[in-house]
Figure 1 (cartoon, rainbow, N blue to C red):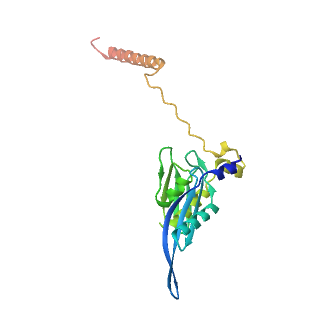
Figure 2 (cartoon, rainbow, N blue to C red):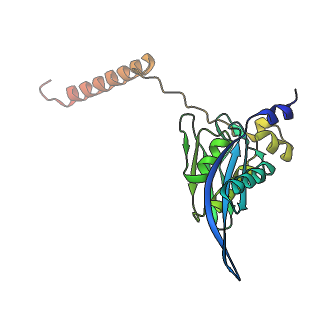
Figure 3 (cartoon, rainbow, N blue to C red):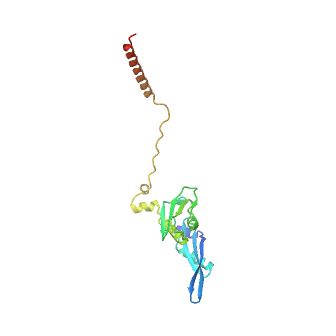
Length: 211
């Protein structure tokens, strides 16, 4: 079984983010319909966002799921978080995504959390910096996730190796030894003190009239 077959065999879970009733004004009055915003994903590394519109809610959700399946993509990850920091933009929406250490959890709200969780991201920090429109926020999140790059991809683009692309870990300074100074320094100090004492004694003897 190939990688594609395994990916297709994973069960896609869906989550409805928002259902809105819209109206179209015609000659005879208003025609009401419903829109649905849906996120689907396998909670491993594939996720997609879809939007559907119909006269009934179930049909609108079904259309949104079909649209999301057409827009599935793979999220580059490092362990349980993303590979690097990224700012996703769409219209007036801006969503900042930052990697987080293991155990942090998904720090996000609304539809952004749904996209990250269904995309398999378990530890991440997210912040919305623009509009709160749910459609634009989700599309900004998708924009950021799609522009993420793995170290192998960056190395191939730059013509370097992976070790040259990754940051060099900072060297830890060796702690200074805690204790008394070396015996050589102590002996030198003692000799200097003895010499000073002798010079002082000699001067006092010469200058003392009673001696």
